[in-house]
Length: 202
Image (cartoon, rainbow, N blue to C red; front, side, top):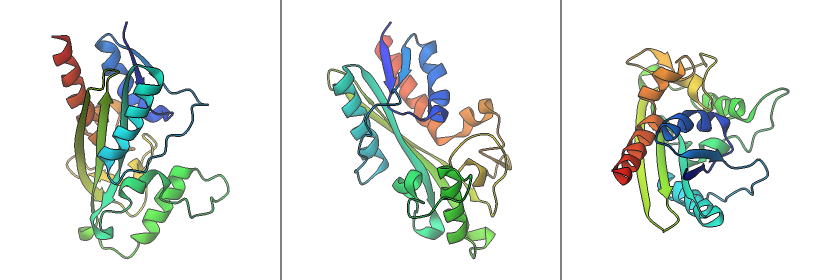
């Protein structure tokens, strides 16, 4: 069984990506907890995804999948964008606060005076696949929505509680996993990647 390593330690991402790949017959693994951090110094979601996937594919001699994703808020000129995961690195964590919660707190503070009609935003996901022979592919997909004034829901991770899918009137954190996997930026990018894998197996 051919191995695919998902270049992340994020269990939320692994949960979203693992099942479709296993259905295609791949043995799916994630990076061990002590794997060195890979510097994401690209200027775009695509560059960062490729940096991670190339590193892991070469280091572990396997198929590697990496994604770089984040939220871009129109009123902030696209912030936090590629800095989504480390947006609040300049903040001191409150007692009991997680990094995700600090990122959400900073974003809400920066958007506190922006009216509802100007709170459009989109999740972005660039997903890169790098094969041991050097073959590469990248899929970039988006999920359009609106930023709320306060979080809703207990599911998901990252900025999901603040992101409203206006068509369903639900946040990413209110959706069941099966619903989110039909709507999200990462689900759309994964669908494109899975189709590419299916083409390789034909």
